[in-house]
Length: 209
Image 1: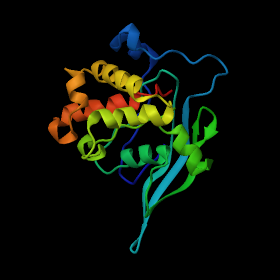
Image 2: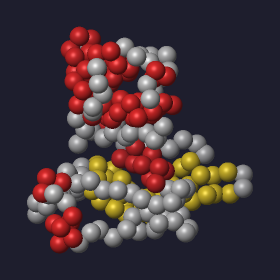
Image 3: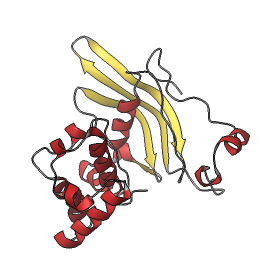
């Protein structure tokens, strides 16, 4: 696997005997059944940003896979391409960025070949992203409850009352105290950590794969 020059992104996978020693049983990666494909497989992904001064290759042929139930960390120094890799997978690269090649297979489907409307249906419903800056990702003029329930009403066609109840459960699940009151709060009334938990609740709302 390669990335931007001088960058370190993914290290080698831990040996299974080491995993047995450092992780409790509940956190260990389940073995993939024989013949089952990875949930997410990235092959040779290349993403560049094209400017007047030329192209800047942010992601250069990265390869990795994530199995169902697996937790994988993408690590590296600032600017090495971690966020661009995630945005490329989600189909959220904005101009002057461009995906130049590779494959992003999610449950066997190449996300790079989907139409925008197909990707919108998949995004949130089956695959979600929690952004690094939660306060700038939340709409400042909508209360938290409106933003969490919007996900449920659009993707699950839920009515307002059951959607509100589910939103309250989600906030409680991510450890936000007094969830009923917090649903009526606006993003600027919450700490950065609490806003991050709201983003996690929104990402989990549709129970993505």
